[in-house]
Image 1 (spheres, rainbow, N blue to C red):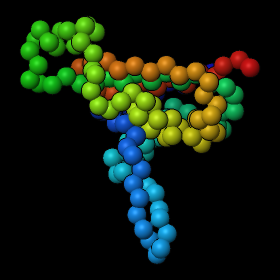
Image 2: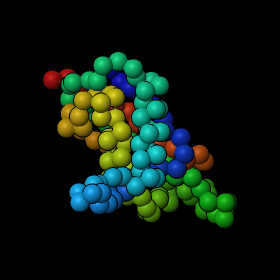
Image 3: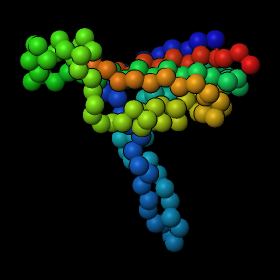
Length: 139
């Protein structure tokens, strides 16, 4: 089985956990930006898959596309879109993947420990987005 979906908008990396004290206990929580992006990723996944979470080994492909700045010249836009210039800026690719994989826990698969293959890359595109493909692998 192959499940594919797109998360619209600029890719967002998983932020560092935040800490607070409440009645003598320390609580950890996600930053608001990460929490909102995970919620959007979960909704996008639920639109294309509504069955029971998968229990087999999985391969995940994450393609993060960043938008172009309006200030880029036509020559630079062309270089970005053809792959001659790549986005070596934040967020880091591993943080993008981390947030998306966390958002799929309990929705597409039981736990992200089932992921045994991972392919991820960053590129430029006219419209920023993240394309995610989840593939079941033979046991």
